[in-house]
Image (cartoon, rainbow, N blue to C red; front, top):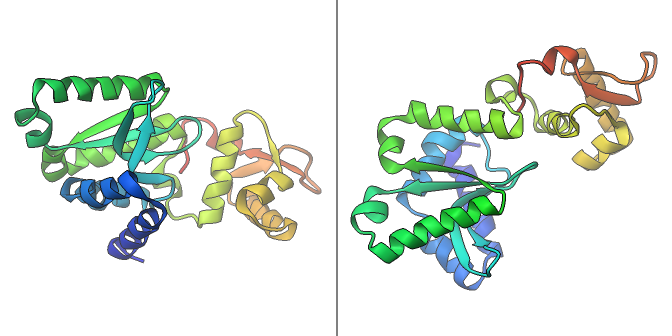
Length: 225
């Protein structure tokens, strides 16, 4: 499916689960700049909307509510992504709004979130920078590289994410089954294929593999998506 179809399904899915103020903010706050970011930056780099939440309700430690343009909820640390139009965030911002915006960012950081901000001018004039920034985010914060794994089937990408999450440890067939929601036979077949493809290697013998880890040639200088 192309961008428009996937985007519509993703947005409708979130809309159907929202009520009250959260639903209103999604309906009214998700506009031109946010869709431009998704279509011109996120979709070309990532290719899906997994783990990405629009107009995400954020509550700080004092109980104050804020709304983030996007929240990318991934292990090990969530990321807030903001799209800033010049008129909204500079020319038309009074002193209280300016203070509130800074307090909001501080609250996000103090809750151990990452944060990225894009101007709508960059979204229109410098897509190379914007796309490179998202690709670097995936590599630096989530151990991914869109170029290396974007063509892999979804289940194999999820196995790679599992392997990255466990780091220097290994994982077993049961872990893969739980991660993918499939049976032993299906998981074992996928794992064997990924060993043959050079993404994984055995961590427990060669005749019959029970434990897996990232292949040695993949753990140095290569990141996964």
